[in-house]
Length: 144
Image 1 (tube, rainbow, N blue to C red):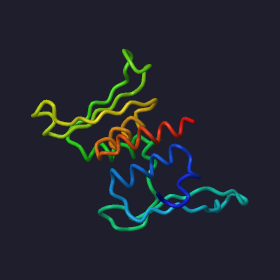
Image 2: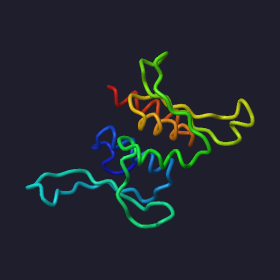
Image 3: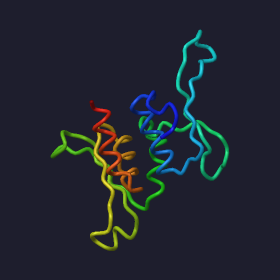
């Protein structure tokens, strides 16, 4: 994996996974930095080469900002996003699919369930790029 990945918070780990596997970021780096106005406080900076622009940028907060998570949605043709009161304990459900999935029943549709709509979108996006099994193992490890 990427150096220092294990030192990130849960949400930043998800952001890095989404950036790499869903959004196509390259040359991801995670480095400890010092706040410019923080009196010696440090944080982990996550950045890499963003697709399309090919410049080094900070990785967006896909897992916590809806405006960032919506970039994932834009990669698909359709989305179904709602809060379920019937099952999964009131979690958000996100379903991402393309035109093929609408026209041909049984084609892949990618589901994600989570406590927030942003995480549900991230999980569905990771499943869409065939990271579903890895995501399952990652979530099990993180919950320990």
